[in-house]
Length: 137
View 1 (cartoon, one colour):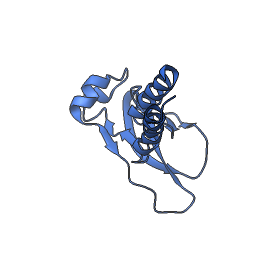
View 2 (view 1 turned 180 degrees about the vertical axis):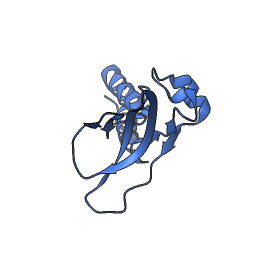
View 3 (view 1 turned 30 degrees about the vertical axis):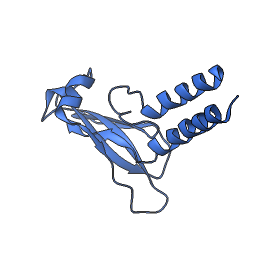
View 4 (view 1 turned 135 degrees about the vertical axis):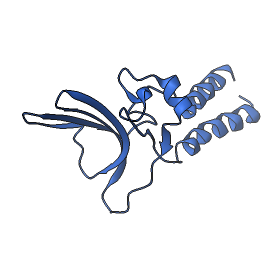
């Protein structure tokens, strides 16, 4: 393998880590305000509406930023709320129920937009490209 190919491969691999350093992006919306927030989630409409936002880092030590999707039913009316949040625990979903209100809230930490549509990150593409170049050279 020549030195140029090696340097290019290393540059691509390191750039994958740089892309992921910006912070977590989550969809922030409510089905009460916009139908594109409802289930099933339409990623094209959500993108056009500008739902994907960069979440602020938590101010309390021990917490971490997360994306949250809350499904609530109040007196038979369903509302979906997608938002940024913070947690100091690792439970994926929590819920509560009474005679008039049912709430289920799930959270994710791993990937931009994980509280809505599945997205492919640029970092994943760069890693695949780096592996392909490595195989060629």
